[in-house]
Structure formats: structure tokens, C-alpha cells
Length: 112
Image 1: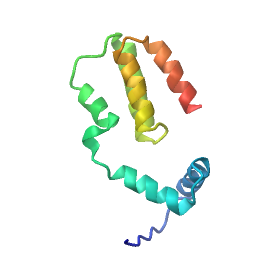
Image 2: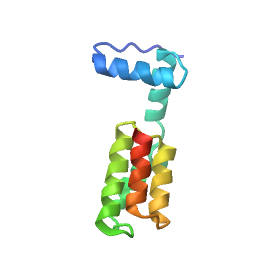
Image 3: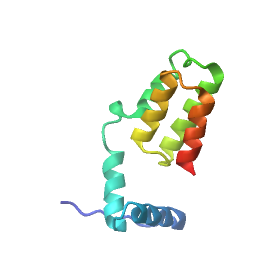
């Protein structure tokens, strides 16, 4: 295996990684490896890619409100506040006709 040294990591990034490691019951080093491994997975199968593709398609049923929920899901995913599975579940609920406000409540609960 290769060795990687990262210098000048902002304190808030280090603290966030440390908290995330504790939540996942991993060492900081193991958490960083997991984050890096997740970041280099092929993007074609990710919900973020699906959301970006949706920008070029007609809005989901539910109109502007559903579109705003999709954008919030995308933002949370890009900030690593949601897992890919959580984001996919929320988007599938929108596609299945669940009201945008209900999906938004679920999103807020996941982010709390």
C-alpha cells in the first residue's frame, strides 16, 4: 500500500473528520481512508450524477417545490451531510409521488 501525507489541513476539516470517525467507530486514519476511497469511486452510478442529469430533464412531478428539494438533497450530498443511499432514497420518494414537503421533512430529519 502507498503512504499519503497531507499537510495544512484546516482545523475545522480535521475536527469534522475526527467527529465523523467517532460516529463511524473508526480511527481518524481509517476514516480518512474511507472518505478518500468513497471520493474516487466512479461517479456514473452516484445519486449526485443522477441529480446533475436531472437538471437537463423536465422537473419532477410536484413542480418547483420538488425541484428545490432535489437541489437541497444535492447540496447535502456534496457536503457529505448525506450518504448516497440516503440521497437516493429521498429522490426515489419524490419520483414515486411523495409530496415534496414530506420529503423535505425527511431530509431535515436526516440532517438534524
